[in-house]
Image 1 (cartoon, rainbow, N blue to C red):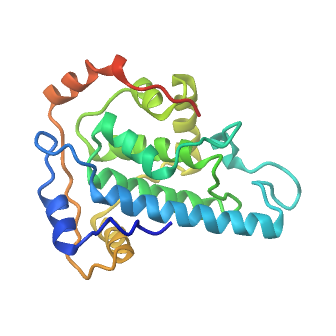
Image 2 (cartoon, helix red, strand yellow):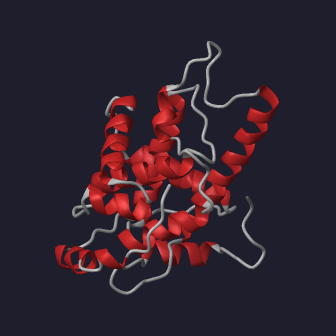
Image 3 (spheres, rainbow, N blue to C red):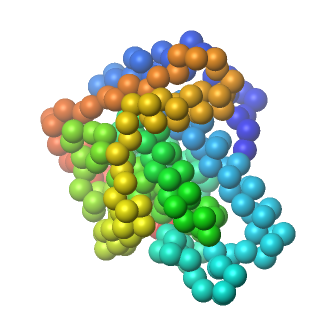
Length: 225
């Protein structure tokens, strides 16, 4: 999915958003979310074409289920990727670097499970899981799994299972060094045709902000995957 015609992302605007991002002052959605949503949407479209052509539905040549089926929903959620990522940001305020690390994890996950394909039935659960794990890796303060579960539209039991399955399928390879982080930033940078300078800072939240946001737990709009 390409960016909408009325959404102009200039290098200056993107860099300002990244370098000047503040949890206390900024309520707008980081631009990296739109870039990531575009990449995921294109991946979905490509995999759907491959699936129609080859008759694939997360099943290998022997007819057995792939290890990634834990992320499948019973039905395809009607919330698009952009809206889902914006929802996660609105309720968790995960910083731009969290989404970059989540993107790294998604790429590693797909490489480690070549039979796995991102589809409309598994993408939402994969996103909430990778973002939660990435947030724990990047941020100093984090919400509980039960909070991420409510934001993501799954039960706490499902969230715990998804996290555990993801960690084992990844062989707990969660470390992202500076060079890897920068290489994925550059890839996102190329997505919007920006030449150089797109660096996403690790922005951390203070404990008081976490506590104040947790007080609004009951006000989260419910969704179900």
